[in-house]
Length: 260
Ligand SMILES: CC(C)(COP(=O)(O)OP(=O)(O)OC[C@H]1O[C@@H](n2cnc3c(N)ncnc32)[C@H](O)[C@@H]1OP(=O)(O)O)[C@@H](O)C(=O)NCCC(=O)NCCS
Image (tube, rainbow, N blue to C red):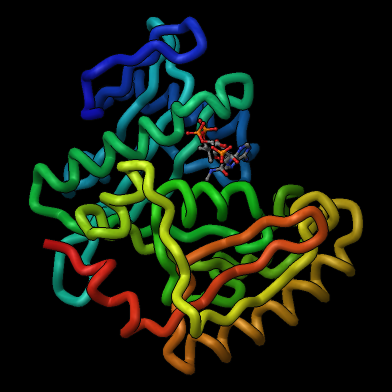
């Protein structure tokens, strides 16, 4: 689905299209304030910068009402142009109806149409629903773990923890991503390794920050060690008690994530 196409989601016609006016950027800021609060919201001026420097903002609309957006900045990775997807949000009452996926698909189509084959973004490995969306639903892989990426913030969402982040790399026209969009789940090879954390960690870290910090610091050590040994994250299994990040040797998945 590309920008401008519309689809019926749970009765409401949802349209995804480029947004480029100040009034629309203010709407994106409003959605961020509702989603993350003031501390983390990107101001409308940065949306203008993104527009003027090869980035993109796509909005999802229910009728005339903006219900979600994704903001991407233009950047470089190994000398090649990429989109760095900085902020993506769907209003909570519109989640789990495929709107996030529609936004990411439109982002992908727009990038590919401009000769850009990689979209990257950071995410918190302790936010398991989001990690599942990124890795399993979109087919992103992870090659980097950035300890305390944005510093310790006042945001209640971060629960006072260091902002450790994974860098999602979404190889837009790779075999892996094309097959996931065709409904075929990626399967880990036999030499896969895993790092397991409690399945309730996303909620638990909010009420028990000390437990969150303990899990985070063990996880950080494990991630850094595996990535150093040439493994990358290719999957996430969420069970009733534990969630496990799946690691495979980078060379064994190189062909699967190669872009055209
Ligand atoms: C991440 C987000 C944009 C996904 O939007 P969405 O419209 O719910 O996405 P879809 O309906 O296409 O896909 C839903 C999938 O995303 C997962 N998901 C990711 N984050 C989620 C969240 N915070 N709440 C609910 N579901 C979430 C669901 O598990 C679901 O997976 P499933 O299809 O296997 O059930 C939306 O949940 C959101 O705005 N979250 C808060 C902001 C955020 O964390 N943004 C990402 C970091 S910038």
